[in-house]
Length: 556
Image 1 (cartoon, one colour):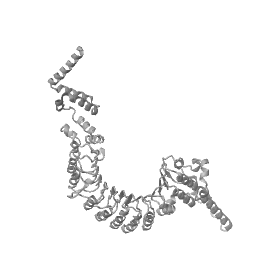
Image 2 (spheres, helix red, strand yellow):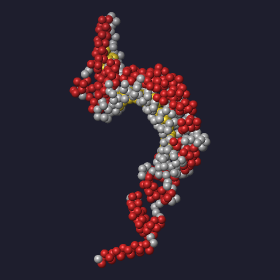
Image 3 (cartoon, helix red, strand yellow):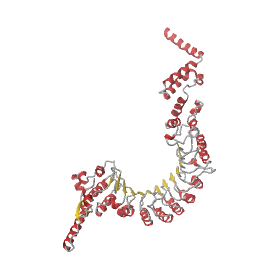
Image 4 (tube, helix red, strand yellow):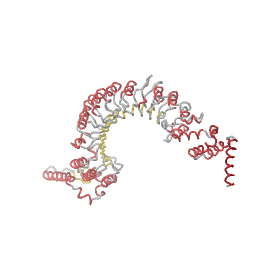
């Protein structure tokens, strides 16, 4: 599996010429006395390399395209597939990923030569469906087989493709990418996703300066682990750089995670928010915001009238911070994520019902916590549709409080409780069954909760409870109620229907036909019970009427 040139290059007398991975030249030292021979050899090598470097610049790919097969460009099957998709422009390839190594699927590409890189740029710039460029790994490794000139032309080709709007860079030379893209940074790329690229004071300043010049910038995502070794910036540096985002008036999504944002950065953000009227989503996870930072953020967020999602996970936010968020974020915010903070819900009355999705997972709730949450769930005006409470130290008593609050709740579909809570099967989980299907009477079954569809991981939920949750997934809630009635009350009591006499029989039959298609025994037994229980005088009266009609028809 070792490439021939790699094996040869391992021997002392050979070296590889950059840009031509299959061409080797001798590197055996020439005699010292033979200066002329050495100079001649050096001149030849420089001339050959210059010729190689100018190859992709002078190649007329448009003229050659009709007569060049993909197999002639590269022998790598994955690269062939990517080139073919770009050439055919069949709409199946939306993202091109340049990788240093580990090419495993279509869309990934590791160029093997300058010529190959030239063809890649040629097909990419003509694609009508390519919308994203991804760079994974060091650019020196990605383009190690290519000349600098072919690399420059490749970037020129990409920048001439107006369809590519998003650039994603992972563990790469960020400064080099920005430099190569040049003025096109301000022209085309409106969405930036940066992950695990080294960020020091110089790099982050260069990056935000580039953002400042992008008039149509819509998305910035900078994601770093809390303890990432790739970033060396603090609150003051970030605060100075964030101020440059004031020019980004079309920003829709802003994610700055794991960059140690604290009160200074929050103050800077608060000043630029009024300029971001189009902001829809913001993620500031894994920073050092705290309650003080929340207080500062809230001031500026009031101007973001279209913001609908706010994530502040792992930020040392406590009950005071949650209360400020619940009361202070714009009414447009319907998703609030606060995983892994310091929220306990000690004896609070919070308007949690205003959100549609609330994530409090990973917070150690106090014994008052379930009651605070239940107060919102039981409120008829509660808007919550998804509530995540995994790893919040909820026990059986808390589960019972939450379950009881759902009896009349017709909005909540997800309640994540299974992960990391001390809820027992016989006590805590058991209380959910009568809430989902109250079997004490038909009326009680009909009035049960037909909305809740999930309590977390299926394998951790008792089977009879999971069955009811699955039934609730049907959008037709009348059908859900009827199915629960048929399953829970196998012998329907027909006595309440008798006062209506036979006039109700068609309705009974129609109801059974609709909801008991697979229960023929139930249909027949129910109709039999209905007929058997009817008073005899009703039967005789109706029978006499029918006989009279028959005699009149016969005599006629």
